[in-house]
Length: 609
Image (tube, rainbow, N blue to C red; front, side, top):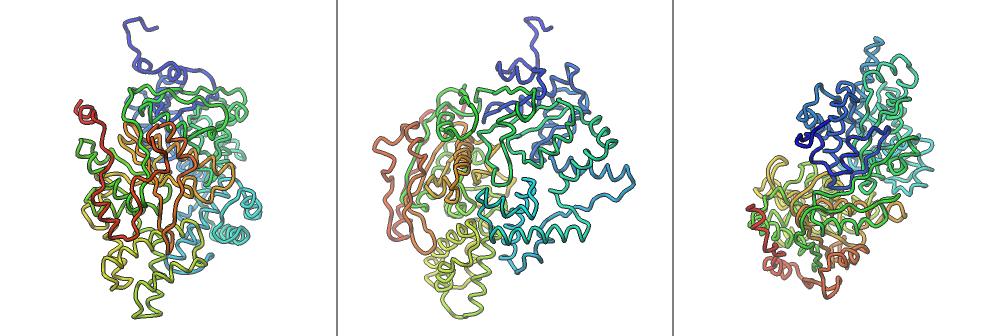
């Protein structure tokens, strides 16, 4: 026992519920960890405390994470806690593949040959060529991955896709046929993919008692992070690893379940005691990341979409700047004002990398890439995510080049108009969103060059306008304002966050028509808002370019709830901050003179201390 003057290094800084989660002898145990509640601290302390108390042997710990980075951080933090011995940590796929290879070696068999990318086999099956084929293959691969995550065979795909309301790229029947062809080609070549790795590992444990005994002896204590993101296939493997043992701890948050579209299912976490009879759930209840105003706004956005019973977390930080909600004349004005606000925020002492701009879809990034580049504000966006380098954009540029080859000498604006009118060739909502953004930039290009130039010159201009090769664009390792989608923001946090594009059709996204899909959209908004530590700025645009015309937009149906909580707009949410302009030149003049939201008076003082 520790005397009153002795501080327990593993427990002294935990709140009562964190303390219970770390020290509980319950098994299986689920720890519900809302955003900012100290999830990683609790998970690592529980492992370290178990090791110290003799309940856990480090070399027999298997910690499952959803990224290699998270696994590395987990191992590093546990090592710093003084644990004697190294735990095994990794993703479901990495651990399962290592086990399959060990299984083959022990039986003098050839290790399974794993297909690195589905596109290698799917390309010839799907057909086509160039960037358009790349996009089509990626769309079909995503559907196959969803099906396999949900334990759905090719024969069952069409019915399951229809029941789930999937927006399939080529029709459910066609995807089912392509899925079957892909599976047949894999068998012919004696290959397995990464989805098969999970199912094969589970089968090996179930069918081979000797192998199962060896794995269960080696991994006696199971810990799973982000359990709300587990798929039925991953749950099947987890049950195989666990066997009859009850030594399982999972950590997650149903309020952050945002990957249902990839096959994830938060149901086993929500109903943990039913999923694992005899289990116990402890819910953490304090938020250490964000100011009370940010926490309150994120909870309002969530509503009842977390499922089950939920008590909103209590913010323990002092009050800070109230969140803002701003309506702009159009998406260009929004992007320009956000870029200016980031510049001013940096002038008050906030580092570039402690700011982020979040948006619902990848295609929305183009406006911000362009606005930040023009203003000279550094930003970070992965090279693979940068607008000008994405496969959907490359496919659209290929179509423009084909059009130009067939009709040489035709004005570029006419080729652009053909692209705008050809809706039949657009196979997905994502492709349509990228098409609309490309058309918008195409109009900017036409104005910039006075109507001359061709597709080749436009492609070069597009790369430059969105930061390619420019000083405004930082590499992924350098400092800059982060431009990320709501989904990619999960697990991250920043001092100042701009949550943009809060309009009907984007938030919630237009194709989320079922109750389950709209609930996931609310959870996604909750995730985006809860990334902010000190300041949160929300915005929407009254008009956007969509194809060949500027369309009016309505605010997100949930924005009124946010406004009521923020108590920011005394004259009503729908009042515009900037009137729309009919001509781009007038709009740009207005944007150049626009003032970003002013930082709170105490920001400079807070940063100095």
